[in-house]
Image (cartoon, rainbow, N blue to C red; front, side):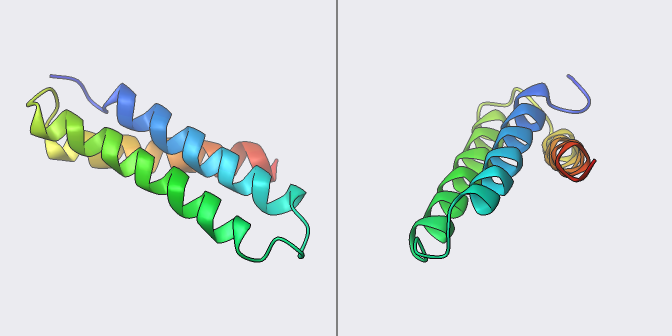
Length: 80
């Protein structure tokens, strides 16, 4: 139907980008807040991809490739 899934790509990009941003901005005093935010954003990205699979909008491989592509773009943009 689509390769890769645009929804999964955008969700993974947003989750990784925001998580890396919060990881650099928040100080060490927020020891519990960092993992909680990262876990929340990653779970939302996974949920967005799984709903695409469950609703038969995308094939599982399309969603997996979307997650990888979105995460790779986010890491690239943050590091560069």
